[in-house]
Image (cartoon, rainbow, N blue to C red):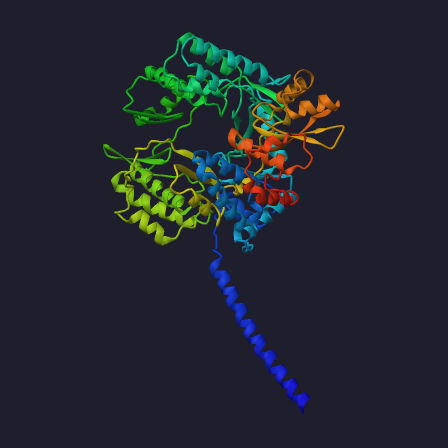
Length: 639
């Protein structure tokens, strides 16, 4: 009897337990469904130019665009850089308050890295899936389109062939060697000449001269709105030898004509780039990416218009220009002739024409021009090839950033449109933002409420101190707390997103060789013992190594590395330099150097090299050291 009773009781308990369990599981699933947003993407946001089937999760993430930000996890927190950012902020803080601020930052960061791990977000799942897929399919590359804000997936070999076709065309000539050092020297001579002619100050000349430039690197974006998807070549001139001089000539207002033409000729004759270790000189046209190119293009178009208008036997009633786009009002029977006049000016400058349609409208830039009797009315317009992709509402950006995007687009529509088309433009804007995940209530409030205007806030500009600008990475649950620590101080802290979809985009530009990298923290090893030396430099690494070699033989007292090699007759492996960190800000780079020295147990560096690194960070530095063995790669998958 007792056993039967226990058996029935167990069955009853199990039945009740499973009923409650199923109910709770349904509740949890409902909570998950309501808490995880449904992110809808548009088919036209992404273009797959391959025969490879792309998983939905991969398409969804990549279609959100390169600027879409993913919430950072604890694994993404770079303790070293946060310490360096903090020390840079502390430069504006009085000495008596610095240690208090350091302690608060340390406490906040420690609490964050020890808190329970949050559930992974939907976009983080997509991010991980996409990273895995691209790693397994290394023949694919991801990049932006030339126009229309479309994400493009194509095969690496196809992209490579298209770039090579451009470089082996008549517009380029292959060079036998890297001309960077020669061009850098010539640029610095022209800058010296400008200084001696009193066009620039001694300080400006020092700022403009470069000693650690790198070769411009070519890459391209596909034109998905054209047949066969041709590539628009872009030459990245960042930190190139021609960069500062090009910018100066583009911005200058007054200079001797002879010297101006001499410098412009020099800049045009030395447009070059590198691709896959080879060097090419552009022998026709301006470099796409040079700061000088837009200005010269404007001069060329002005000259073309002036020359052509003189030949035209009739009066052009209206002519407007934006770079190479022209808008004209001409007699209907002269359309063919006008195209003939402009195309006859140069075989290298050929125009196409778009005529007024049946509604008496013609597109021009982002407007649609309507001829209404004797009145011209503008309406906001986007071509059919445009993806209408904006900063998505579910991107991990500050809500104020998203609100400002809406306000600025509304202002743009109101400024462009004739009053009779403003309502239509705002309605179109409403639909575009809804496609990008923005809630209807927020859009209605910002787009249609007449009292929502860009009110200029009164700011107190009277200050006795210069504002110190700094930044922190955007990490939910951490960055806001770090910023609040410095409230009331004369510091403005910006926030930047470190984990975006762009991290998964392919790196199209040639990697910079270690020998010509600059603004780095580096490590070199002794070949005769286990010790290493940590240093930092703003110069080329190869130049800094040459100075180390010179110090060993001539001035061994200058640094610990030279002293070690000279006194012990040890050899240093200068051919195998390891870059530990890259940082353009000198103050932050010094902090990162001290952190790296602190991590190493067997360094040649002197103990005094880390004296300025506060002991308050000791625990964080230990945690950073522990995490070094946890390999987490979040960069482009094709490196």
